[in-house]
Image (cartoon, rainbow, N blue to C red):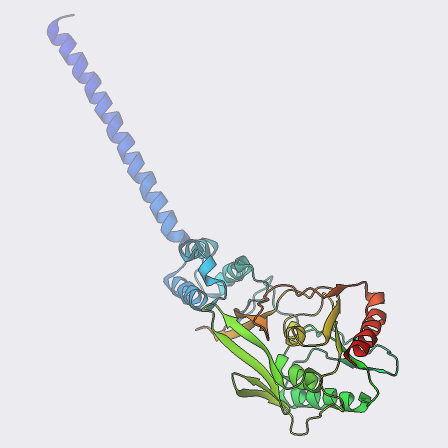
Length: 342
C-alpha cells in the first residue's frame, strides 16, 4: 500500500467516525428534546400551579406545625402529585394527599366540586350515648356532641343546664360529667352547658404556632374567647353547692370539642378523670376559603389547660379503666374525695 493509499483510507475512517458522532449528537438532541417536551406536558397547567401555590401559602402561614415542615420539599411533592393536571378539579386528589402528609389528623380539605373516588366528610351523624344510672347522692350529666344552627345550639344549652338544675340537690357529694362518645362539633355551647359545674373561671387556652395564648372562660352563662362572647344563655343556672367534686369520664370517641371540655376540667380542684384516652385531636381548626370555592379546615392551635399545659394529642385519664369499671370507680372516688374535703 502506498503512502497516498494509506492516507486516503485513514481519511475515509475519520469521515465515517465523524458521521457516526454527528448522528449520535442528533439522536441525543432529539431524545433530549422529547424528554423536555414530556416534562413540560407532565407539569400541571399554569392555573393549577397558581392554585397549588395559594394552598401552600395558606399552610405555610397558618399551620400549627409549620416550623417542622420543609416547605421547598412540600411544594415539589405537591407539584409531583398533581403532575399532568390541567384543571383545578384534577388536582384535588393531590391536595388531599398533601393534607394527609401534614400528619396532624384534624386538618381537612373540602373540595368545591367533589370528584368520584375522592373521600368527603360523611353526612351521617354519630349516635348519642344514653345516660348512666348513678346513686342518689351523685349528680350526673352527659355532655354530648352538638352541631347545627343557632337555634339548635341554643336549645342544646337550655337542655343541658335544665338537666343540671333538675338533678341538683343539696345532699349531692359530687358530679359525674360524662364525655364518652362526644365526637365534637361546637365547643362553646358545651362549655356553657357544663358551666354550672365547671364554675366561673378561665378554663383553657388556644396556643398557636407563634405561641400566642387566647383564653377561654365561663362567666354568668357565657362562654368567652379572649373576652368575646361565643355562646350564652340568659337564664343560666348556679349550683346549690359551688365548686363540687367532679369525676370526668372519657373514651377514645371523645374528640375535638369533646376534648376541649375534657381540657376545661383539667387542673380544676377536686376533679379526676376516668376511662380511656381521648381520640387525639385536641386542637383548634380555622376555616380558609380558596379561590375556587373549596374550604380548608386547618389546624392552627393546640388546646392548653388553665395552667397552660399543652395538649394537641390524646388526653390520658387519671385512672385508665375498662368501660364496665368506669362509673362504679368514679362514684367511689367522688364519695372518698367528698369526705376528705369536709
